[in-house]
Structures are given as structure tokens and as C-alpha cells.
Image (cartoon, rainbow, N blue to C red):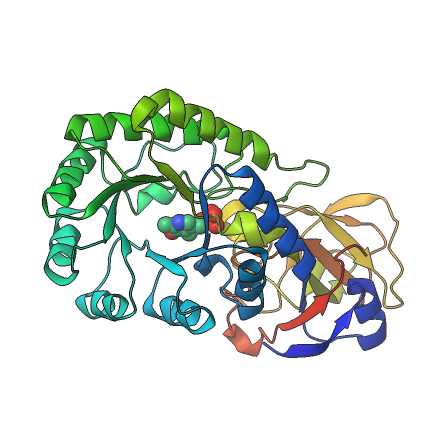
Length: 381
Ligand SMILES: *Cc1c(COP(=O)(O)O)cnc(C)c1O
């Protein structure tokens, strides 16, 4: 990604002045810092950031500046990134399947929190990780509810296996903890509540007092125009149900939001390459670019269209078929995208809430994907 040295007032000012031919991601540091403060003030425990959702250094550095003191890493690359920016911060290695060299890499970089969801991977950790002061969190899953995307399809032990693993973790001398992930873009606080209740049953079944309960990520960002996500309602439910379920044995709480922290700090501007025969819209960004996730969990409908002079298109909103720039027919935004009727070639389509799973999943397929990143004071047009 190209980095602009200049800080612009907002996307409109940049687009009007620069007329970019390639798609642009606009980043507002103030938004990521304000969101971090919302988590730090509201969440009843330690806030860590799931680096995979947006590993840009500008995001990580702003989160550190705002006071975020822990990072959930999925790979040696992410561990090295965090260690370079802060040699002492807490790193949780919560990808539950790792090769032996990956485990050794993390041990050498003083990673002391791990997650696990299987006997084979736990055996590797017991063999390769010194247990003193080291935490292993057993990850379990429930049938999903409330989330846009089911993470349990890949990771998470059943309750029964989780109790077994937890016992083994404690017997091996590690600090025993439990973790789960309710699924990404989860808007229903009850999803966390049912996981927390089940975690207490698992600990009781194992006869193990857990040190910490990591309630995962999944915190939503604003994807639906006119609706604001209610993070505080989720925080309050987590706090209340943790006390109800664990009583005097209530563990310390940890969360590891990715999307919830970075999602609303970015907007993308994609240029209209063509309105083909007055029907289909072709953008210079799409499913193989920053919009990969739309194919998984649906579009964000917080959309504005600016003409090349930076004036907002005000036509009646119509559903349109929208394609990305590649020659692959998969490269179509799902469903019909609400756009003003007067959208024209050369316009910019600006979509808010694009901070998570966008910079990292952008590919160079067909020679596209030259995505610029520009810092702005505000994302308001
Ligand atoms: C991806 C992931 C997260 C972050 O998920 P979001 O939905 O972006 O909050 C947190 N923890 C783990 C273990 C993950 O794999």
C-alpha cells in the first residue's frame, strides 16, 4: 500500500484534489482511538486486539497510544510485528493449530498465553512450552447464534472434550483458562451469555478453577446505515452473566475484538469505471480487493456517491448490480447495491465501516488491487 504523508481533512477533500484512479482506503486515527477508549472504559476486563483483522502499523500504533495492552496474534509474522512495536506488551497466540517451528518461534519471543482445542495440539504445547507462568486457554464451541459468520465450523472443542483438556492443562502445571469466539459481527449479547454459562459448566465439570475467561472477538462494527451498534449492552451482559455463572470463582475477563476496534476507522472510495449500457456498475475495487468479506457476510450499506467535483449524488436510491474490476464472474457484490439513480462513470462510491478484513484480504488478482491508504482527520464527507 502506498502511504500518504499528508493528513487530509476528509475523503471529499482528497478525492476532489487528487482524482485517484486506484481505490483508496481512508483511515481516521481519531476513530480507532475513540473506539479503543470505548472498549477500555466499558469492557470489564483486559482488552486485547485481534491483529489479523487489520495488521497495519498505523492501527496497532494508535491502539497502543490509546492504551490497549494486549494483542491476539495468529502467526509468527503478527507476533514479530507486535514485538517490534512494543517488546513488552502481552501477546496471546490464539490460533489453536500451530506447527512445531511456529510454537518455538513464539516461545523465543516470550509469548505466554496460548489457546487449544484438541488433544494433539495440547500434547505439542506440553512438550514444547515451559509451563511456569504460562497460560493455556481451552477453546470450546456452541451451535452458533447471533453472528454473521460461524467461526465454530473450524475451531472449538465440544464441552465434553473441553472439560478433559482443561483438566490436562491444570495437571501439566499451566495456568488454566477458557476461551471461545461467538462468531464475527455478532450483534446479539445473548450469544456471549450462553457461552459464558457453558464455560462455567465446563470448569465445574473439570473441577478446575479457571484464572481467566477470554470472551473472544465478534463485537460488531456499524455495517447497516441508521443502526448504531450497542457495544455497552454487550459489555454489561458479559459482566452480569460472568458474576451469575461463576459467583465467587469469577475469573478475570479478557476480550479480543478485531472488527469491533478497527472496523469503523476506515472508509473505501472506489471509482466507477463504467456504467455498462445504463445498467451494471463496474468499480475499480471488488471481491478480490478490499471487499472480499462482502461475499461472506453481505455488503455494508453505509454508502455515498460523490461526483468528480466532490458533490454528493442525490438521486433516488435504486438497487444496482455492481461488479469489481476483474474478469471473474465471482467478482460481484452480493445482491443489489443501493445507489443513487444518477451514479455516473468517473464518480466515487464511498463505503464506510471498511477497516476490518479489507487491507489484509486485498489481492493482486488480474493485476488490480493497487490500494492506497490515506490518513484523514474525519471520515465524514
Ligand atoms: C478472528 C479472531 C478474533 C477477532 O474476531 P472479530 O470478529 O474480528 O472480532 C478474535 N479471536 C480469535 C481467536 C480470532 O480467530
